[in-house]
Image 1 (tube, one colour):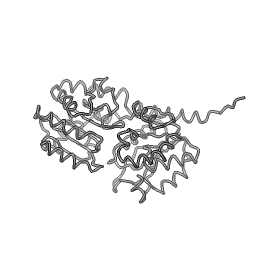
Image 2 (cartoon, helix red, strand yellow):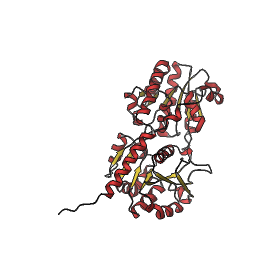
Image 3 (cartoon, one colour):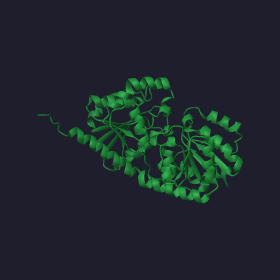
Image 4 (tube, one colour):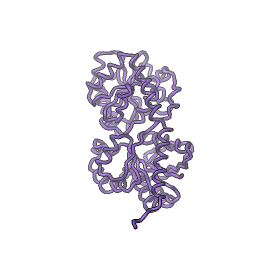
Length: 392
């Protein structure tokens, strides 16, 4: 089976779908699928993008229209038009970027089926961000793109319902994201992260890992930290992630207003061993999102054996069912109360962290996810190849 995946860019700074694309395509290759990945130089700023092992990666130069349409590239469009016929199926990541539009158009012209993964981007709260542009683009392009897909991948059951409410009639299949559990079994020692941040010694470290974005609920985290700081002097919050939206200045001002300069640290983007060092040093992981697709950082934290505090908008109710952490409403008081319960009970942190790792092993490894994706691909191709019968 030959499958062509597309996305706008492959910079690790972009977060979101990037680690998903890497993990999924690598494990598809391990199971015998021949995978090609098309992307552009959009937003790379001269840095190297991801290079999934065993995947034929082709990166095309973006052009000036990328300012208005992420990843716009005439080079990529022409390559898709020439090569779509050579693949059994196309898999498009994110409906809002130009490569998604170009790939789905090329697939239709070549009479090839395609799958779309929307990666949480149809959540009503996310649609409010750049609302006018998304309303117009969604009506003119995205709905048609989705309705002519062979299947749409939802990451959660909640997202499946959201996709249907968007007005989509194409089949929707729920297949979550995954992680490679083995990557988080041999983490650096806790002291490694303290070499860069010595003020963490002796502190209970609460970690947020992800983009600095208004929808991530980081304002709530800072306000909750202020409430927690009244009760405990040994807690420190680390906010790690890239400032892709220019939001860090607002958060730093809020930190100052709350008097938390000595209690909250911003590290910027952490990748590779530095990210693993942060996960190793952390005692609690927090994701207080107002809207979320399916967080890779959350899965990585659970795979690292951390208890988690999340909101219902993270769409992972299994956290509560498996007693892997707390699911609380996106309110500072509720967030502070959950964090306090964990800071006061080391045994509870350990038990919930072990439950979190078991949950990932049972449901969210890339081996399992790749197997589900291949079954979806095979089902689509089998249906297309079945002879059509005409009524007598």
